[in-house]
Length: 508
Image (tube, rainbow, N blue to C red):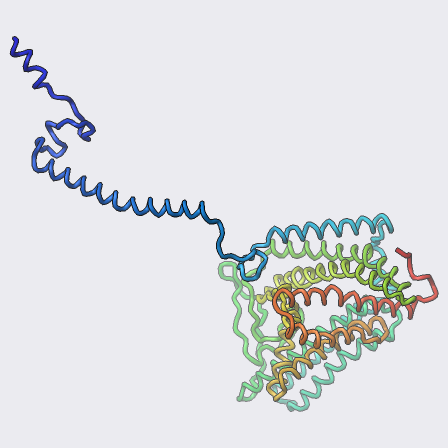
């Protein structure tokens, strides 16, 4: 027994886990090898090698981290630009833009409240009707617009005769020129001679005839180009498929390609006359279907914005213009500048609303209704860094017409580029004056001179101003230039028709 008790503590083994957390030896290893075997020694060597590798890889990282921490403590500067510097590359000014919008809203809210306190509510829907009609039984402007169908038919039947070869190219060109001249002269003579024609009605009628002039000019040119391309004799007129009522596949309309002279039909002509474009094509790009929700949104915008425009003009523009007459009569330069700046804000706001109403809401509504595919009615003119970029991008239908039917033909005839650009500005200036002076029945050439001033302004901005400065110059010309022309015409119209009847409005 003594031996037994002596040997017991010696032979008892301490229990250990497989993971080898204890320092004692394991009677049975995880791989089944005995303690002290070669496999155990190999495992220990591998673990030691792995540990050395981990220690070698961690140590440089820790050293680098320690070095970075020391550098951070010793230095806090690096080479960098201020955010407002152009070299910084920073472009996120969203917060500043929001601030500008808030300040603009608050400033205009104060002006609008001041206007209400001073003048009360001036919006009168009944007065709007009187802007179009003096006599409820005489509608000269709508009658003048309806009569424009005569000129549309004249252009169509002239092209049909040319396609059949019954008249020569020279005769057809002469007929087209006469038709286009009458389109410009006949409505102007009517507006000037008919006493019941209001200025607003005259602007509406002349605007329709101006659009029709540009469309029929394009119609004449494109059909002439088709005859030049076609070397064979004119074929018998076939039914046009420009705007057919065809079967639909999966809800999408299918259209047949049209060739000349199959386009010379009433349906094709009136589709082009109503389409939101000034440039004619035999096959317009078409959208697959009419999106009813999109159509209703544009219709709601049209109705809402036109009411907003009328309200702002009556409530904000008219009192300011009336109060500007006396400083202009007295030639009080300081008060004239003050009135000009006061008028600039509502005039510019109304112009922006009109741009969205016409070029986005109205033209998209018409295009969606007619499934007209090309919806590029404007580009990013608000980013214009030059005057020429603005005039090329704020009204794409007119720009396409000028470039296609006026600018490029002049270059092909050997004209220099600057001469062609000047000629385009001259044509634009003529139509601006035509749409203002004739309805007002007075000729002061303010609109014409305002357009011609754009030529030296474009040269100056393009030569001396770049980037943000050029964009600021474009915005200033828009904000200040338009009120000057408005005040000039209103002052002359007031002197011509109302001088002596009152004192020129309420001062304030």
